[in-house]
Length: 69
Image (spheres, rainbow, N blue to C red):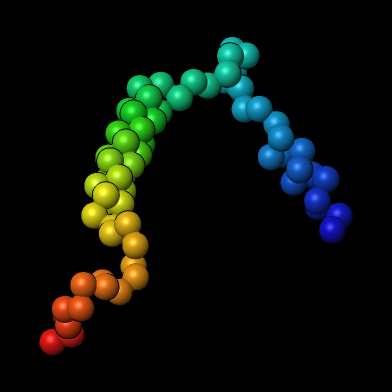
């Protein structure tokens, strides 16, 4: 438990370069964010397609036809 304040201080500290500037995520971070956004859009479209296939009701049909085979 004595190391908890030191650990919290380490996690909260911002890492800086020797010239005092903060590191930036750069192009790799941008590409990863774009890929995550594209994957999210594709998953949402797929979910909407699957939800359109779900019947409006799961009740048994009342037309008298026996669909058990």
